[in-house]
Length: 233
Image 1 (spheres, rainbow, N blue to C red):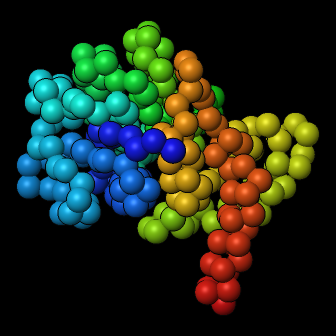
Image 2 (cartoon, one colour; image 1 turned 135 degrees about the horizontal axis):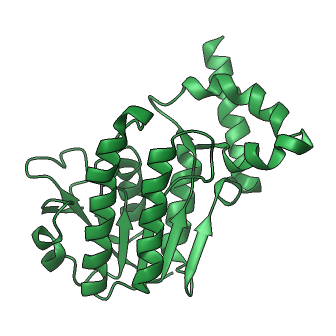
């Protein structure tokens, strides 16, 4: 495996602060775009790039010599009430990031989108779909990940829905939707991101919940659920 030079936006967020240490552990060089004064929760051997994810002129000149761009910027705890923020933050940031990646001849663009279609969170999904369209139109080689909800620290309440998911995944009329909008663990998400970064596609690759939760990941998830249930008891 060759070492990658990776530029990350949104690296101080829920996924980023777990992904970056794993990438560094595996020998990759990571540069993380951060707001001035933030980034204290990232490893000391991660290079911090002060800038504004909503303005490419503040960071485009700092991307080289990175070959991989990972876009993790997003409004925390998405809800239907945040439709305006989705357009002002999520959409603007992906537009600026794609433009900056093209300017710097990035070899592989990685974008965390969202599972779609879905009967809820339509404003959020619409913005992420626009982000995917920007990537496709850019000509960049890219990996697009489409999780629905990521289980992990401070994101545990959906564990209560697991029995419902189990039933819906086994009913023919609801199986496809239940799997597309299934839950993934933070561990599965980080593993999939690392594998995607280390194995760039030839063009555009889309990875949904089924791909994020492969057979090994499914076994890991069941183990996590059992351990969680035991700790609750």
